[in-house]
Amino acid sequence: MNITVIGTGYVGLVSGVCYAELGNRVICVDKDAGKIAALQAGSIPIYEPGLQEVAAANAAAGRLSFTTGLAEAVRESDIVIIAVGTPPMPSGEANMAYIDQAALEVAEAMNGYKIIAVKSTVPVGTNERLRELIGSRTDERFDSISLPEFLREGSAVQDTMYPDRIVIGADNREAAATMTELHKPLTDNIIVTDIRSAEMIKYASNAFLATKISFINEIANICEKVGADVTRVAEGMGYDKRIGKSFLKAGIGYGGSCFPKDTRALIQIAGNVDYEFKLLRSVVEVNQDQRFNVIRKLEAIFSGQLRGKTIAVWGLAFKPDTDDVRDSPALEIIQYLVEAGVKVRAYDPIATSNFQAVYGKEGVVWCGGAMEAAKGADALCLLTEWDEFAQVDLQELQNTMWRAILIDGRNVFKEEDLLGTAFIYYSVGRPA
Ligand SMILES: NC(=O)C1=CN([C@@H]2O[C@H](COP(=O)(O)OP(=O)(O)OC[C@H]3O[C@@H](n4cnc5c(N)ncnc54)[C@H](O)[C@@H]3O)[C@@H](O)[C@H]2O)C=CC1
Ligand SMILES: O=C(O)[C@H]1O[C@H](OP(=O)(O)OP(=O)(O)OC[C@H]2O[C@@H](n3ccc(=O)[nH]c3=O)[C@H](O)[C@@H]2O)[C@H](O)[C@@H](O)[C@@H]1O
Picture (cartoon, rainbow, N blue to C red):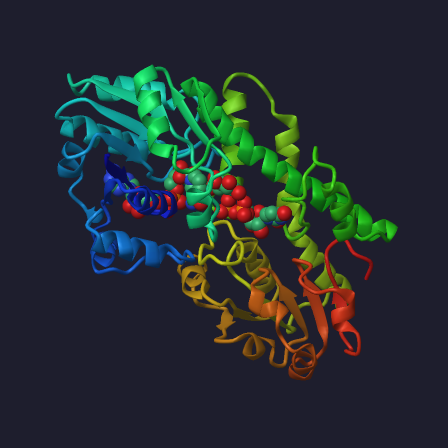
């Protein structure tokens, strides 16, 4: 099939590459000319394991191309997939400006029947609204599809090629059949629903996963007070198939471009129909507070005297294997420390320049390695569980630091790892 994907962020780029890998002819479109020039030159603007190789192979095979020419790409395609951003507005509601703009541009370019699918995460009712918007600008026939995306950053290629399920929201049987055919090679779990249910499945899934995380973080907080170990508790819970093992890792709370945004958006969606989503409000509140446990621990250690201390921070990305720092807990933690007069020495294997672009360069010593960041520090806060942090020589780390105090915000280390060292070690939800 001939497919145009609009937007070359994580979702557009990864899904475009993967549709090409399935043998389709894919044109990826972005209005960001710099991004397209880089992609045309074979460079991938995001860090995503495996993506570069699959993209290069498909571009070389002539199945994958990149352009800023939206109209021309749409005219050459049977299926148009919209994957532009839906960032949060100050109210928490999703900003539909990029979606609307893309839809209008598609409408203007129409030259025959097409399926127009929305992969971006959009509030319930959006696809119906877009159908009217596009229909008001073109006489050509088209069908609207809601095609929510469930990939995770850091494992996006794997998630896209081997998804747990594909959800297709459609109200036209033939369009649903075409989309089912397109995704058949990926999984047998293809769920065709009405459009509104598909839109809701996306928000409900993210909200549920966020709920699991806030739940286990609260259990962790209680574990710390009663002397239990949250990692064993999660393990013991996870063997129950009704609960499941995943998303029960306690830490400093969820971040990223999606859970924070989508939980707030769903609260708004509910609010718009006079429903107060009390549970989800608490999930967000717990998450917001969880990151400050790191600060509370530091304040307790230094009896509230943070000013003048040197604190090393390992990890700036919102999770490992990505250079994405959107809504990363590290942003607020570092900001708090700097404002409290702390000398922060920060290191991330790949996310530092993205972090600087959001946070600014001032007030922090940016380091090129983990040991360099730890040099002379009064304490070290581990905020992202990059593999390389688990591999460090703890004896060397201890000798590098001024005081051997480690706050492990992601439970990377086990008690036995620290045997024989002088570390004062704090983790999340485990006996100190
Ligand atoms: N990042 C993720 O892991 C996931 C994101 N999603 C959802 O997918 C959507 C996209 O997310 P990201 O890929 O992170 O977005 P992003 O914000 O990283 O990228 C969006 C891209 O769309 C381009 N764009 C905007 N308007 C355009 C237009 N009219 N024509 C051409 N290009 C245009 C922008 O230049 C940008 O490159 C969002 O709704 C998000 O909630 C869903 C699942 C996973
Ligand atoms: O809608 C989206 O954009 C995506 O949001 C998440 O994917 P992502 O944000 O890439 O990353 P996750 O692996 O879900 O992690 C999100 C945050 O939760 C945290 N987390 C995750 C799992 C866990 O057990 N504990 C925990 O604190 C991570 O550290 C990270 O900060 C969902 O997992 C995807 O299914 C969804 O498509």
